[in-house]
Length: 232
Image (tube, rainbow, N blue to C red; front, top):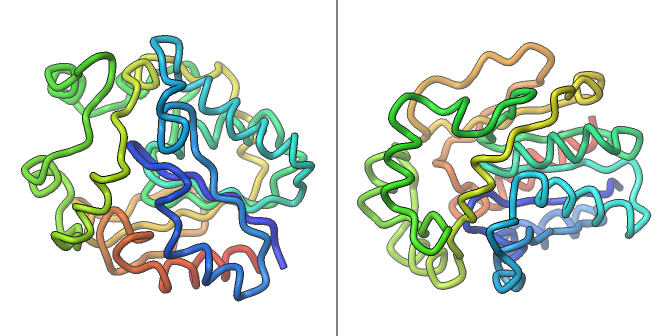
């Protein structure tokens, strides 16, 4: 049995793992899906001071306060950034990081700094009340390849999804992320995403044949990959 902490990407809370958690629990794992400040049941807590550092603190504090050790920390998409920063702080509590189609932060840089040209401008044009709104069908279809989301999936995502606080993209990562490099790391690449799977020295690379939100589109298969990584 492993202790598994699940962190969803932009717009998502603990609710996004509802199709995955029962499979992992049935496999004998102790599973903790988290909701970051400003999402899900914590949507009302978002403010202009909600940053990447806030979300890293959410993750580290949840693990420390619960007294969790030997944690398999699973981070999807945007959550790869705060999860990396959190793991860097509490590396002695982390057994493995599992990145799921995740953003990997770079020391001293913001997420806008490491984004492709034009991304910051495009995102800033959409911001409403300090948040990046939950994506429309047009944005999903244009940017996420063979995402595999059905109309019902999109309705479910939008019914609970909450806009991303913009300052999470403007807050630089710490200047030193060296502690993470000593941790076992797995990267799960979604074959439906645009582009080729990344080449990441120091990571075990595995793939899943679905789009960017496998916790929605292929939860059982995803749970099996997480289970395998946790037992490695």
